[in-house]
Image (cartoon, rainbow, N blue to C red):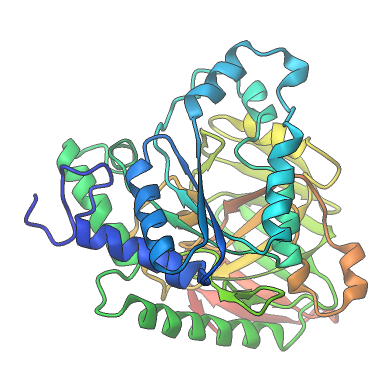
Length: 413
């Protein structure tokens, strides 16, 4: 195993020292594009210390003034869900949100690590109670994203527990090696110049976003096994790829990897039934067999084979939580979908398949400020995957005409 390129079974992540450094430099130098003199906030969970330290080292090598590393402990969250009073489960201390807003005010950089480190830890708990506690997500995160006050990025960190979840039929070392190999590939760390490879891919995604925006469709329609969903768009909805720019002009790539183009839908217009094509991992719980019915823009029914109550809890958080804040399209040219692996990690799975999100919307996807008051607002943002090669996507014009957009995962425009 140790001879495999990029893999070292003796490390916490499974990355060898060279690959871990390249991973950190990709997230810090390209993803978040950390600037000299910036404060850099790095977030991870207990079990990801090795990767957090590599990110901190890279941040200082890129000129960071200070690195603020924070860790979230899912075991502490489990204790809260088990024992805390019912009416306290959605309480969040004010300084959690104040910290995020201050990171924006001081034009800091933010880097986070995805990937479960304790899969199944909350599975035996009451899903309704688990759905009340949405940490580590805090609502102020959406505000700094829409205000474009921080340059930020999220990347996947491998671990043995995650590898066992993704590849349960393999031995511990073999599963970790497989996951490390897959992540090395989808992150393009197997390229001589990963940054150049990502720039080329993001250029292609930006071009696709322009092509899909140009006709100014009135709505998108998804049809496939168990799915017939129409999602309305606002008059100035513009598709974007995950290449952002801050108010200070710092260009960054929030998700590494990213294979999507996305926009802000009309929260009043979503109708039909949609069946998730991949499991959803949220707040430490895994939701399988998800099916959601929309009427007049609102999710009126949320069912699942497992843990439906978790998502119902999120959708009941506020008035906008049961409405859509994002619709995204993913083609088959990305590296994630081609693997055929379910990662049980939204960062990766949403970039393998077209998806929608309940909750807060992105103002940056609206060309007309008059539409800002019409976009969805919520304390949550939860993506779930609805696309596959079997799901067709069409653009609908206001006059009722239809244009094929995706067939078999391939662009038709």
